[in-house]
Length: 262
Image 1 (cartoon, rainbow, N blue to C red):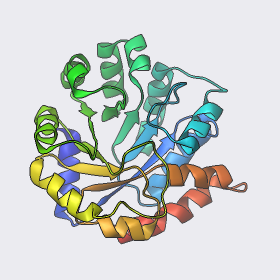
Image 2: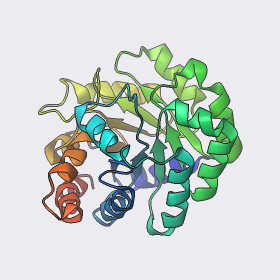
Image 3: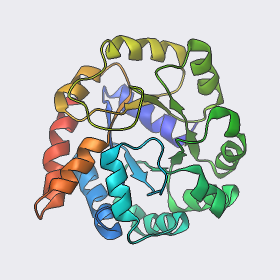
Image 4: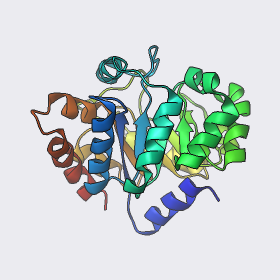
């Protein structure tokens, strides 16, 4: 059983819905971004998405794009990010996955990327521009390294497509709550609870939901309908607007969300 599957099943057995915050590595700088991720764990995060800045991010909205541009002013490679995580890994008591685009993986090498990530303690990858039909080679590299490639599933995916992706997966699934790019929204999509219930009936792996979630009441509404809640753009905005104490801002933002998730 995958490390991530085992972890999420243990959370489910305790009635806990995972809080999964997203951080752009390198924003506002690399060392600070790691300190903020550690603060998230101390504030109740169960799972961390660590974003690799990329020059052409197809899935990112304005907030995360802006953070990525700032991070790229002091650029680092995917290998350097993985090495930095290995140096800091003892501070992370929850699983961490790397969200990146395919080009940095291809440049480093598929097997090399997976092996370095596994050695560092990274639990898997999310690659938004790698569809199922083209994911086989990197999926095999991840399997050999005993880490997971986490697929994104769109709200437009039909039942057969969802089942196909679920069957190919080794770890958890990432359900995208709405069409379009990332970004906090005032309201969740209508009927999202029923949509997630139908989605879970079609799948066998634990799943998280993201794109647009950023308030405790939104997270609370989804508890019991999914295994984890991803908080991305809203958290990046909090970090951007923090006046001098980003760690405290992260804590103040995440703790109320963590408390409603069990």
